[in-house]
Image (tube, rainbow, N blue to C red; front, side):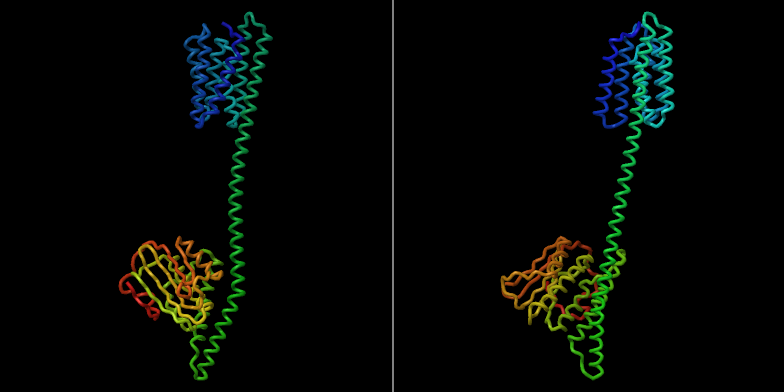
Length: 420
């Protein structure tokens, strides 16, 4: 039985529509290939069942040639050879027409897409040549010209499959190159950002060194000269002058540490903490600011960030009292509570009750420190006069201080009032 030309468009349309549907809905490529193989097997077997002359070997060849498509991505050349041999065997024995070439078309596309165009071209030529020779040899009632024209049409489909495979391969290579370029651009962008950040740190370090270091060094030298001259004259150096000399030395130490961190980010800055609070209070007293310290709760080890921030808050608060409160006294309160550290600095200066605090970098810096740690800061005038700064800093429990170590405040010589 010869192939009915009227059936060709319907079979081709059904196969094409099935392929489009599978590709549109499939997510896993192996699932797509398996579904494609099943659909092609069903269509090819339906065509074989319509041929009265098709026997068991023909049905086995159709099933083998169709189901082998499930492995087309894993072994494109092996599948190409298997499908071509099976479908050529089936086509030579039964002359089913162009639908027998659809599985071969798919494998030709897959082989070209995998970068193997020569085996694909050879398989296509063998299949087309074999079917053409078989049909011409067995032609009875069908003009040779019609057979050749049908084969030439199928050649066009094979060429189209090869072109689509080439385009798909180039597109995949382009996408891979685009991803590599994007990754390289991202890496280059990160390197450029790090380089700019490093250059900015070095610029800041140079500016700090050229401006602050020179000024602080002069202050320290002048204070030291004044203390030395007073000693030569047999006079006692004023406490304020000694406080200036000590404060300048501490400022130089911290500035050097800051410059070291700016120049080398991996360096660890020896941050000041509450263990230096006694020295800070002594300097405030020497500068003419009466200051008391009260510690409540059980002292324990603090995270370095909390310890350093608490020290800086007290330092900035005492500086503001000395600069803005006139003749005043200050009271520093350190409270160790469950999961938190409370730092409060009160003064009885000339701030008017209810008056808003004057904006400045000091309060802004304190607020930024506290916010970064997830705490709360309140800076406002007191109802009875003066000003208060209260910071609550969350603290993770990392254990109490070992017995016998003593208080960091009492070791500095600063009298501390203990409260429970």
